[in-house]
Length: 84
Length: 184
Image (cartoon, rainbow over all chains, first blue to last red; front, side, top):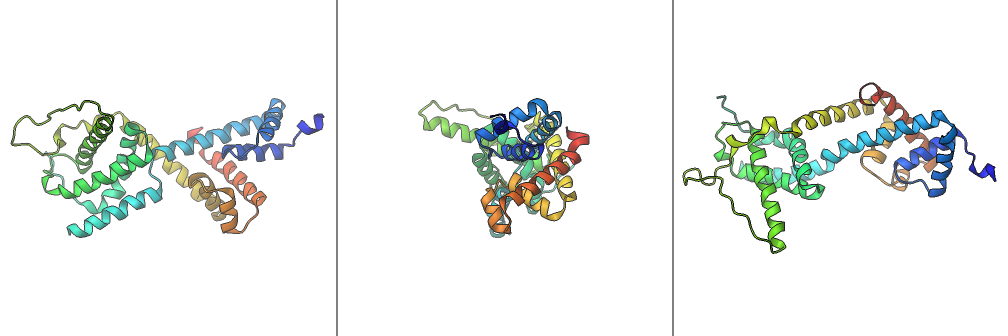
């Protein structure tokens, strides 16, 4: 029974990465939570990993992505050509 | 007062991020914000001859954008059959139709500081990304910033998904290390 719960740090890291992209299953998340109960290193890693996601999301939310910028640019350049 | 010149060729590169940031905090919808920014540039182009050089280009564009945001809210309000609020910004006929460039309190805008921090963070992420090995950087960017599906990336680069996750893991660890000093 206990064996099902126990995962290695390697696997825990893998689940942690997956959950950053919302791709971990519920069962994986349970195993991961259980692992972080006694593994301080994985807990810290998970903290940093989440923070990284948050930082990137912050930039992503408030700045234009390059594809969005390009679509604005192409519409604008069309008008600019007409203008000159 | 310094006399500012207007040059639409560089507008998008110089101001689109700032204007987008300004808009997104007000309309809270990426697609609408993108449309409004795009419209602002086009409106700016059309009324270039009205630019008097009293304010900087950016301030002038923001003043156009402000009107666009107001118009947007008016439009969605009248769609719902709500009463329209009429406001007259120009009391005399002479200035009718001018953009309110000199009345915009742009330099003291409370999002200005956010924008600086955001730009710095974006720069920091970019520079950390450029320190990664090329393949790692590419995959990390596809997955994290462009939000591609795991499967799409695997197919495109012909790697297995476990391979992908190992690369993502290494990239994330180095990114976190690199950003550690200033941003954690």
